[in-house]
Amino acid sequence: MSLGPGSAEYLAPRARAALAASQVVVGYQTYVDLIAPLLTHQEVVATGMKAEVKRCQAAIDRVRTGQDVALVSSGDAGIYGMAGLILEMCAAQGLKVGQAEADGEVDLYLEVIPGVPALAAGAALLGAPLMHDFAAISLSDLLTPWEVIERRVAAAAEGDFVVVLYNPKSRKRDWQLQAVVELLLRHREPHTPVGLVSRAMRPGEEVVITTLENLPAQPVDMQTIIIVGNSQTFRYGDYMVTPRGYLAKYQVANHGQPPVSAADPPVGE
Amino acid sequence: MSLGPGSAEYLAPRARAALAASQVVVGYQTYVDLIAPLLTHQEVVATGMKAEVKRCQAAIDRVRTGQDVALVSSGDAGIYGMAGLILEMCAAQGLKVGQAEADGEVDLYLEVIPGVPALAAGAALLGAPLMHDFAAISLSDLLTPWEVIERRVAAAAEGDFVVVLYNPKSRKRDWQLQAVVELLLRHREPHTPVGLVSRAMRPGEEVVITTLENLPAQPVDMQTIIIVGNSQTFRYGDYMVTPRGYLAKYQVANHGQPPVSAADPPVGE
Image 1 (tube, each protein chain N blue to C red):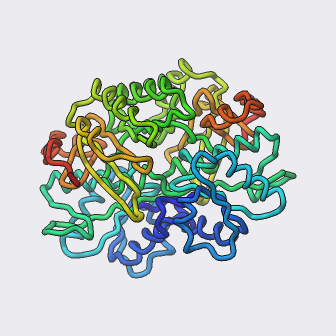
Image 2: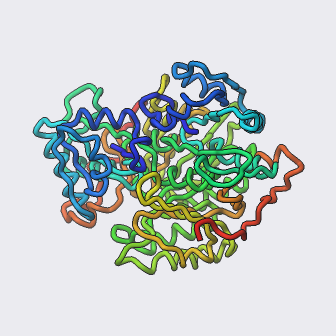
């Protein structure tokens, strides 16, 4: 199930009810901490980073012994979260999985509870950068070969997609973001607006709007998502906006020119 | 602000509070109807399709006279929703916009309240198709030239992105989806899993899993979103799963082979 960005204000009632009804909560320590105030009777199985397989196995084992388990992901469990891995593991183990209301014999019931993804929470704080077609790409090459990531960044740049970068950097992965910026600069203007959001809607929230050429100088960590505008994205005060074309179509007075230059000083710098 | 898929179970507490505090609710009639049970004292300004500019202008006008206005979008307001248009219109009209807590003189306060996007709600009902890099593309060519859409579909196919198609078809736009399928078939296998979700988590919900070659035969309307798997996506019972690579990396026993063939009979057919 999905926790959303982390604040109780963005936890869906369905997710809250599932937490309340669960006997065991399984998750990454940092995210379990976010919902600590909501936990009363639940046993907590929290593990560290890179223990995803272990975490899912613990959830499967508990469910198989008859317990109600909430396997939690921050943001949306279906976007770089735990929903896929648990289904993969059930499949690899030959388990028959059904939805809670499903008929017939199954080995375990599973409901994927969606939430507000990091890309939507981040976009809301930046204004409206995702108003037109976009591509989400994780820069983590732990599980995906770098050539695949590179090929996707190039394809997204060629298609003039707004680009959302997940997992841009970690202590051990320090050169990938710079490589991606160089790749994007082959297709996009140096002053293309770029938004960075860390810890959206939770303690330590940071929002920065800068430009593609200045992106490498920004502080970035594993909890930052980066949104790179397309060729139409413009800066408007403290906002980053990707137009969808309504005004160009319906209002002759607006010739698609942003009223504030994209080269304005970035927010938060 | 965002309503999520439409059920109160997925309306974030923050959105619910904003609705309760508003004096006026502005939105597309179909979506305003979804929240009718939550409205008490609010004046409702509902308009039909293609009246987006009128709707945003009504919201701006009301706020300028001192009223608290909730401009509602289904799904996430920042993904093909109203957040972008209202910022564009404020920019075109030279209005200074600030966040509710912002310092300084502004012409109007604006908070973008994110929600569960249609792509996340649909993905949850399908299993976990968005577990790896994906691209969202609207097939509506009312505001975007068809060549741009075609170029994006081709780029997403070349990059082996999972592809989420918004607005796949309407009464007047009946050939675009077929054209997109033909384009995708140049890069992807005919049996690539494809999920269709209409009216996720609200009355009339429909979920179908089929294959790319059989997609054109499926019933599709403006309220359907379509998720086309990448080269790794597999069918597992009633689920569609895009692996992220954990098992290939950590478990030698699983050679990346889906345990259930992607050619299994589609759900819902």
